[in-house]
Amino acid sequence: MKVSIVERLEANIQQTRVKMSKLNIKTLASYDTEQPADSVEWCPQEGWEDIFVCGTYQLERDQESSPTNRKGRILLYRFDAEATTDTLTLLQTIDRSAVLDQKWNPRVKNHLAVAGADGTISMYALIESAGSPMLEHKATVTLRGDENDDRNLLTLALDWSPDGKRIVVSDSHGCVEMLSFENDLLHIHGWKVHGFEAWTCAFSRHNENVVFSGGDDCFLFVHDIRTPTEPFVKGKNKTHSAGVTSLLSLARRDHTLLTGSYDENVRLFDERQLKGSVSELPLQGGVWRLRTNPHREPDKILCGCMYHNFSVVQLNPDDTLKLIGEYREHESICYGCDWQQVGENYRTGKHLIATCSFYDHKLCISEVSKCMEKK
Image (cartoon, rainbow, N blue to C red; front, side, top):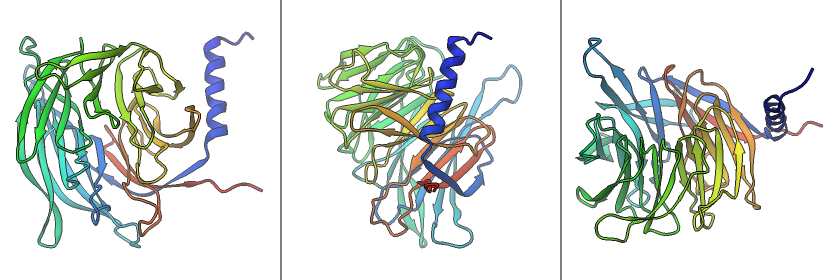
């Protein structure tokens, strides 16, 4: 029987998975979020490292002809890895428009920016109230989008600048917008970039004047934002054969940019030269989110592979990528994931991840450890 090229490729991918699955990922707690869950972010603030948020996205339609209503929640949790019972506690529920992305400020670490399905960016502060952490709303601003596009405007992704003073945002009109935040959220400028949805955006961790964006048009763009009006495009790449869905500029690795795509590949680029990728790794299911913990083993990349699972990829010194672990406890679209943002000296010593999935509205907290060697 003749084996096709596609079958051979799939077999090679499976063999690679078997050889490289060197991590054990054990579920410690799970929770029903009631609404479909799509984002999760651990708080980096010292003293609150056991706190994280989960965002939800619920489509509601009263009648067949009525417009879609996108409702959601921010769920604030505490996870106590040292407790023997009730390790996961829901501290607060904020009802609001559906959440598509969330990021904690890298400098003012108790501030959380949230991307809303109503075309907004909202700012919350994590504060102490009656002896317990809670989120307090600080500001909300509506994006401008493309004035020639009459479709509903959704805020799809956001990222903070390394100094924590600016936010880059991408939206469903294919636009990218720059905001500033000190005491309030203020528009700086916005510009039309992509022909379809701008799924993702990110600041460079090595040049504060550079931002990246990726869209459903398969383009990856790099923008210089020093110009006072509309930033200009420094470079573009169309290596991806489907939409660009995730970007990660690595702070601990010079000029390194990772991308995820609907084409099911993770790619590594040199930020200074985007003509072609340095390396790439085929996964499965489309790569929606890429996450790292810059404080501990930053070369282990947690990937949300939408229609397959959550995977951990090792970034090697020679810039190659290897699959070293998979987590299969979710039964729906794997969207949200994050490493707990702690260093080697954190009291528990555990490597924890939070993951969430959509239609089964499932949230999991898991411990990542090395597999025991078989003798």
